[in-house]
Image 1: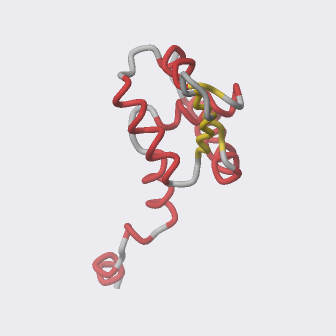
Image 2: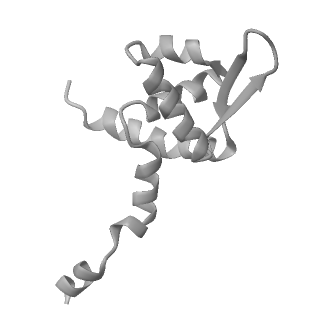
Length: 111
């Protein structure tokens, strides 16, 4: 009976799978934490905080987070262009989940 349930299960349609798809990757959770901590951040500030991330990788991650509705991008019409990033309401609601992951990690990490 359990094997039939497993055969018919579709992991891709679960909330867990959806959440993982939003935060998967090496930098997305760190970017979200940076935006939570500093609220509004410019591209170069994010890059300094993340240290070894390339322009291309940071841009791609920010675009994905923005398209997923977790990050807001505010462009100011000036020269040179000024772009700031911040958490959307959806992004802020995800921070509770990420906080719990950090708490679990601190409690179970071996020093």
